[in-house]
Length: 155
Image 1 (tube, helix red, strand yellow):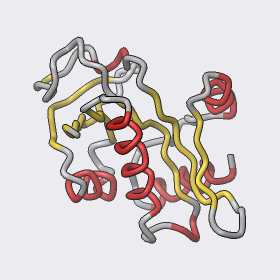
Image 2 (cartoon, helix red, strand yellow):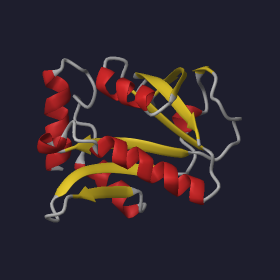
Image 3 (cartoon, helix red, strand yellow):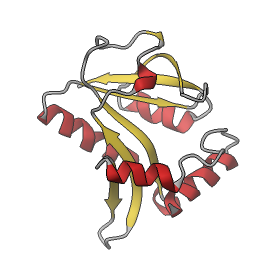
Image 4 (cartoon, one colour):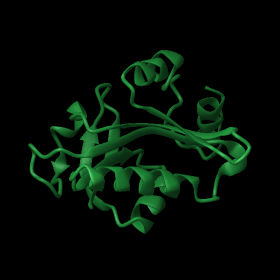
């Protein structure tokens, strides 16, 4: 949770209104753990440097998009949510490592697509997605009606 809290503060310092309402909280992260969808990245000293949620379950908020996904509606795809990198490890390629790891995992399972969404003001994530060849597909809305930019990559 300390990495999540750091990420919340970091986004606030950039004036990004993402994760500023207490989300994700410990209950949500515990749910990710219980669903076996929570992942940690460790450094060589065995310290946690990042956390994320990853799944291949359908993402309900992706069923309706103002735009068009690259893959058909019934396709199986990977999803990354709640990715946070510790303060001392930003800009060192950790986020890229996370994406590449899960893309490789998906390919090994013969799943050819990864989807993700981000806040429209989160330019850092948008730039990362573009550098990793993710395509902007449109706008989705979360359960609380927050707007998010949706991206997908064919693997």
